[in-house]
Amino acid sequence: MKYVYLVGASGSIGTQTLDVIKQNINDFKVVGMSLGHDLELAQKLVEEFKPEIICLREKKDIKLSYSPIIVYGDNGLLEIAKYHKYDNEVFVNALVGISGLNPTVYAIKAGKNIALANKETLVVAGDIIKSLVKEYNVSLTPIDSEHSAILECLTGEDRKDVKRLIITASGGSFRNKRREELIGVTKEDALKHPNWKMGSKITIDSATMMNKGFEVIEAHYLFDMPYEKIDTILHKESIVHSLVEYEDGVIKAAIGSADMRTPIAYALRYPSHSKLLSKPLSLTGLNLSFDELSKKRFPCLEYAYIAAKKGGCYLAVLNAANEAAVWLFLNDYIKFLDIEDIIYNEINNPKYSKIEYNLENVLNLSNSLIKEIKERFVK
Ligand code: MG
Image (cartoon, rainbow, N blue to C red):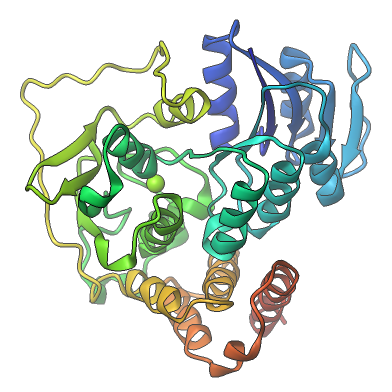
């Protein structure tokens, strides 16, 4: 039995995680859960899984048939991360944004194994998280189709035989558009992802390709690979979830339907596979295509490599600029292509090189920069 703490339970990854747990109810017990603004959904999920501790976004009355511990807001997330009662605990971080970083840190310190869907944790604080994972001797498994696929392809292999990791990209909602055609695109267009059903932040990140940039950075930390050994490739079908090329020319790929419940289940059970009711992939008649993923067409991918090369606090700057810009776009303050400009200007600002890289600075810089960029446009 694994004891699960799920933060971000009402979101896209959160509800799919609960679906995986429901399908494997004898193996998992939900002990803690954090919920979003939708109180009706919160009530439904809490009643169904009856966790011991729940965290609500704000102080509101929730009618329940039993009396769990109830905590609130960002501090409440930390209470859930710290809560400790069982031997085999796993902390599933399905939060979106920089607010997901501190809960990961607290959960590691409480000795919980980490199943990570929150991208900011590794993008912004990869070095810090890696050393904490080592210090507290916990495991860190990715909940993302690409990293899950790479983990599959690396399992049982010697990492020094790896020539390169190849991360696939579907191309997002504007993959068939040229750059000139992006000038007038709307958020409604941007939110229509051709292959995956995901939350709005990550769907925009897929359209700009910043999501792929983040995944390159995460892969660097998750698999101890230098950036020179991490490539990306355009693969429109989202069937090959990523690949690993070895020195002898062998390429291993993990393929399957585009269903996030598969990587979620793998992260919860690694290295075992689960019985899942996801749609089986039919191999007959399958057509797969691979093309170059152009950094000219998708400059955000290039910006991620630039920030990664600068290192230190520049990864926090990359993330904060993107988080603020995507929020501004989703709230109609800026146009789609302004997202790129905002990120470009921040990662090329030399003032951030003076800030020392540590957890406190990374968090303060992230929060203040997000606020500052938003205020530039919201009058
Ligand atoms: Mg992904």
